[in-house]
Image (cartoon, rainbow, N blue to C red; front, top):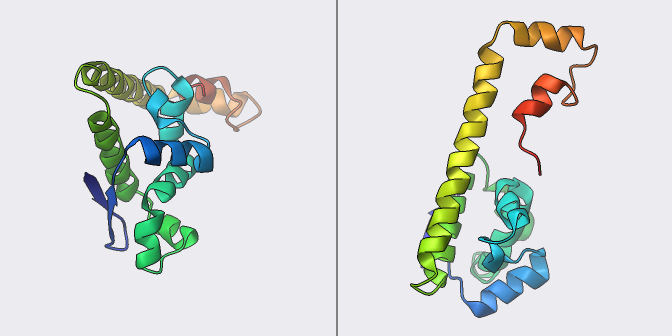
Length: 156
């Protein structure tokens, strides 16, 4: 069992098993067991709102005992608490799988982390280029539809 602390100093324990995976699938619409084969599941873990929905399903019984509703639970998840929750969830997912499957799950998670780091590094390099602002200003649109910004954003 893995746990994380939220920003309100509450400790949440995660316990993933077949029953809780089915519950997350039904209530949050995310099949966490498909992490290694479905890019949408990995993308879900990057979306703070979807991540919170998955976590809520896993901790709602604990929350009831603390008189914490879903809104209050979500208020405790921002910044580093999201990172702690993600790490706990990934560790719990890894432990869920049988030992012969774990190396594949670990590899997929490692590759996802490498990809995320590379995309962040590329975005920082683009923003460090003094011509980046000029390109934004001359594009006539400073929204995320700008080529400079869309190139730094991962496709979902």
